[in-house]
Length: 137
Image (cartoon, rainbow, N blue to C red; front, side, top):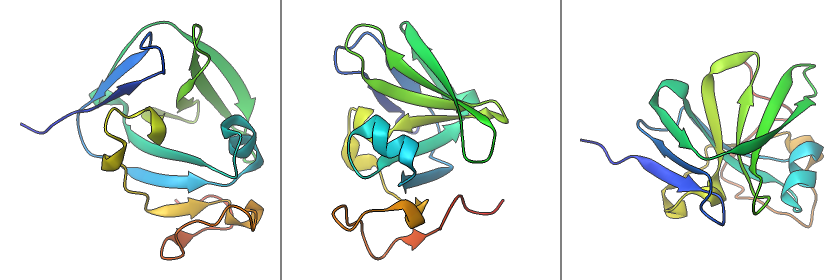
């Protein structure tokens, strides 16, 4: 049996366990992710929603992406840490922040999204595929 991806917020009030491998893993350099992370990018792994078990009470914040579609960020009401994102246009996926993993070394980024908004002071792996915005498809 495969080992689930587990993780949660800093205080442990929100926990997740995810069966299956990520569908996509990326560093995102859009301004929303920069603001939320407090750095030059956010790092994420996206999974099929069917494999996700989520416990704890999260507060949700809806925002409109550059695409005009709504994305919802879930964060802990106790420690304030952002843990996951869901997307109204893609209800079958669940995205976690890579740093929320119990074993962050399992995170393997595949690409950089919104590279056009990256900053010189936040260099990322030059070997990663870079997309000016979101990748097609």
